Image 1 (cartoon, rainbow, N blue to C red):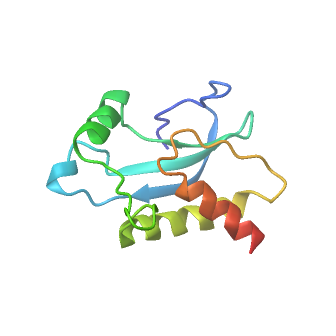
Image 2: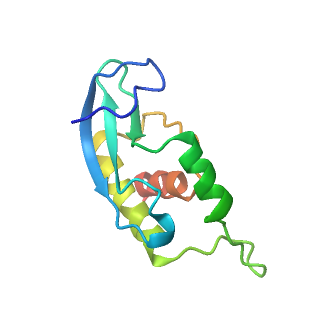
Length: 124
C-alpha cells in the first residue's frame, strides 16, 4: 500500500490499512482523488484518512462545489441518499475497530453528522 499521508499525531508512516474507499467521480469532481484509505497508525493507534488530495484540492472542493443546505423550517441539514449511505458505511467500519470507552477526535467533520451517527450507534 502506498502511504499517502503520515500520521497527523505522531508523524509515523507505519500504518495498517483498515478500508479502501473507492469513489466514482462526476466530471465536476474529476480533480478529486477516486479513492481514499482509512488507516490505523501502528505506533500511536490514531485512525485517519489518507488520500492523494492536497490542501489546495480540498480548498477548491469547498470553494466551488460543496455547500451545506439547512431546511429553513426544521433548522436541520438536508442530506441526499449518497451522504446517508456513506455515513452508514463509515459507522460500520469504525465499529469494527473501536469500543464505547474510546475517545474520538474528528477534525473537519463537516456538519458533524458522521460523529453524531457513530455515537448514536453505540447507544442504540
